[in-house]
Length: 126
Image 1 (cartoon, one colour):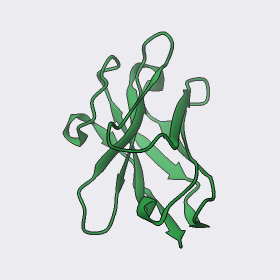
Image 2 (cartoon, rainbow, N blue to C red; image 1 turned 45 degrees about the vertical axis):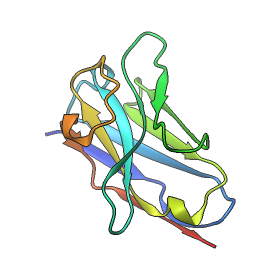
Image 3 (cartoon, rainbow, N blue to C red; image 1 turned 90 degrees about the vertical axis):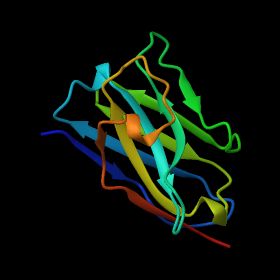
C-alpha cells in the first residue's frame, strides 16, 4: 500500500521560513517523479515544485511562483522536502506531495500523478 505522509505545516508569520517533508512508503521511491502541489481555499490545486529521477535530481518549479521555494529528495530515506522562504499570506494553503510513476516526467499537471498524500496545512498570518 502506497503512502505519502506530509508533515511540517502549521501557523507561521509573514516573513518566516518553513520546511515541509513528505515520507513515502510502499513504492520504489527512487523511480518516481515526486512533487509538491498546494491548494488554497476556493482555488484549484496548483503545482509548486518537483524532482524527477534524472541523474542530477534537478528540481523543476512552477513558472508562476516566486523564487522562494526549493525542493530536494533523499532517495535513501524516501523523503521529499520543500523549503519556503519569506512566507506571505498568499502562501496559505494545504500542501500536498504527489508521486508520478514516470520517473522522467517534469509534469506540472495534477492529473499525471498516481499517488497523493493527505496534505499538511500551512497558514501564514499577516
